[in-house]
Length: 473
Image (cartoon, rainbow, N blue to C red; front, side, top):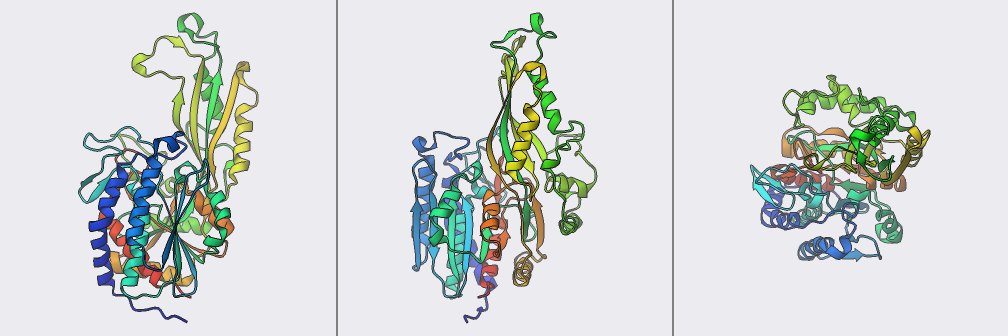
């Protein structure tokens, strides 16, 4: 048996800080400049070449920084995004999988005048720009963890770093690669994902559950062409009113509650207790982290209920529209159709296929006035609920947080989706999971002014390295 070696924590953090400053941050600056939108948002991604640029940047950095006992693989298949795998052989028994992605969400409006999605800016120890925190840093941090431990001659298990390029589209290409690369991936004992969030920047946070996602478009057609609203309104039903009526079948528009039982689940008591602990630490921070306009109030004043609503309960958001001209160029015309793109977050443990069928059934039955109702689904993904954490991992996470943050670790439920986690949870039910990340308050992944909190990123890297050192044979 290979014994765990005593880690020099101070030397580890200093070494990690040095790599971040000299190598990771400059590479992230170049990465942010690449508009590598995920295929769902850029169908012409192959011809544009941005994904290839991101892959080239990652591959060149990997070749410069991977240890001697490592092999790098780029997997490709026609019509699919690539997959980057870095296989690092170890001395200890065990198989560790580290995960991240290099595709990005679209630009989004509302960036501050001095910022932009493809414009890297460092301000107040934060690196602004799309994709740095979600989660372009993951590859660089993962290799840095391995190298800084090897620098201290720490024996490691076999580590496979897996970087995909379609996560923001729901990871549609990943099942294919998981099957075709099964021999290389093996059966992980410990899975580390660096694509999640934090409750604050004062401790190590680990994610214990994720909601699933159902994305789609609802279209209502009432006319072959638009006509003068003065001559038609009142007689011809508005397509927008019909769309609004249909959405009310899914959601109580007053409370926001989803009305369909197929989209709900019983929240486990231990997750409610976990949420109560989170609120005891963050207090009203769970509300104040959002960029509210003056006078705006949350949907509930109960902190526990509010957090559960965004982590363990379903919710509907309308994220896009077609058939609606800009207000500045809209005439008095009754439009022929309204098309609304929806995003429905579903709780962990709800089957997205069953939920999708139920949504389609509810929206398309009994078409109001005989209108034409079309529902097309896009990305869908299952949520995830973590298995029970082993004692070694729980103790190691807390020790790492105390060492590098002077605060105990804490768990958090996330309202977002990482399709890879549900996939791995089903495929490797005996594996231990550590889901963490740098997306803390105001970091605003997917929205304007996304940033990576640099001091937190450095400390998180040290925490994961410390935990990797504690991995038992």
